[in-house]
Image 1 (cartoon, one colour):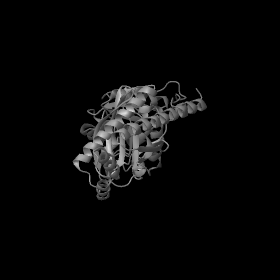
Image 2: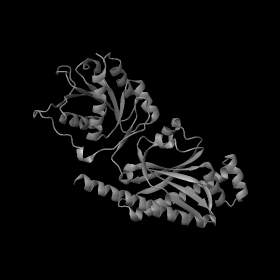
Image 3: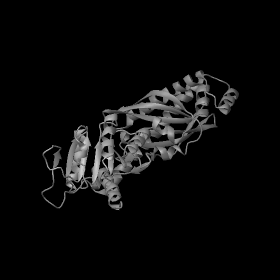
Image 4: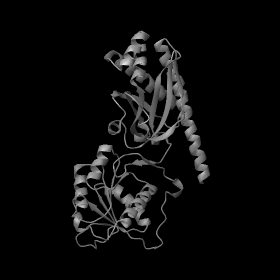
Length: 368
C-alpha cells in the first residue's frame, strides 16, 4: 500500500470517528435534556491530536475531570471528559431542579456541594452510556465506556497533568454547551488515540521531563533496512569470558522488549550486548559503547539502581530509559538518575531510529 492510499485510509477512519462522536453528542443531548426537562445543545469543534501538557495550558480555571474506563481491543485505557466547575454546577443542579438563580450564585462562587456533585456524577453515567451505545453500533471494534471517577482539578497546571493524563497522545474533541439557549461552558473529551486507531505515534519527555513532544511514525519507513555488511552482528548476552565490546548496551529486566529493540539496532549495523540489572554493568561499559538503553518492564527502584550504576561509571555515554508507561514525576526521576531521553515501549523501528539520531548526535557533539 503506497503513502497516498494510507493517507486516504487514515483520513477515512478519522472521518468515521468524528462522525461517531457527533452521533454520540446528539444521543447524549437527547437523553440529558429529557432528564433535565430543558434543552441541552452541544456544538462540536474539530477533533485533533494533542500532547496533553501543551493542550492543558489552553484550559483555564477549576475543572471537573470525569475518568471513563475504555475497554476494547483486549486492553483497558482511560478516556477523560473535562468541564469547567460552573458547567458541572449547572448540569448537576438542573438535574436536582435547583432554581437558576441559586445555580448562578453557586457557579459565581465556584462552590460544588455534595448534592450537585452526586447529580453531575449521574450526568457522567449518561455520557459514558451514550458513547458506549454509539460506538457499539457504528465502530468496527466494540468499545465500552464506564465512569470510574469524577474529581475536581483546582487548576490545570503542569504539575497536575501526570496525575490525570497518562503519557500518550490523545484524540481530543471540544464543544460548547448550552442549556435552554444559555451558554454554560465548554467541554474537552480526550480519547486515547491508539484506542480508536487514529495514530501510531508517541509522546516522550525532553531533558527537563516534559511529556510534550509529539512524533508521528511514518509507516512507510517503519522497517529499517539491513546494514550493507551482510554478516550483521548478533545480540550477545553478557558473560565474564566473552568479548565485551559492543556499540550499544541494553540493560534490562524485560528481555522480550530488549531483544525486539536489539533486532532493529542490529539491522542498522550496530553491535549490541544484553545485560540484566544484576550483571556487573560497570565492567562492560567502555569508551567504545556509544549508547545505553535501560529497558524496563516498568520504572522501578531496581531499574533506577541500574541507572545509577551507569551514570556514575565516569563515562560520557548517553542513556535512554525505556518503559511502557511514564508520568512526569517518573520522567523527572529518570533524568535525575542520568537518563538523557525517554522512550515508550513497545517502540517501533521509527521510534528507535529517532532516539538514536538525537542521542548519538549528542555524544558526537560533546567535547573530547
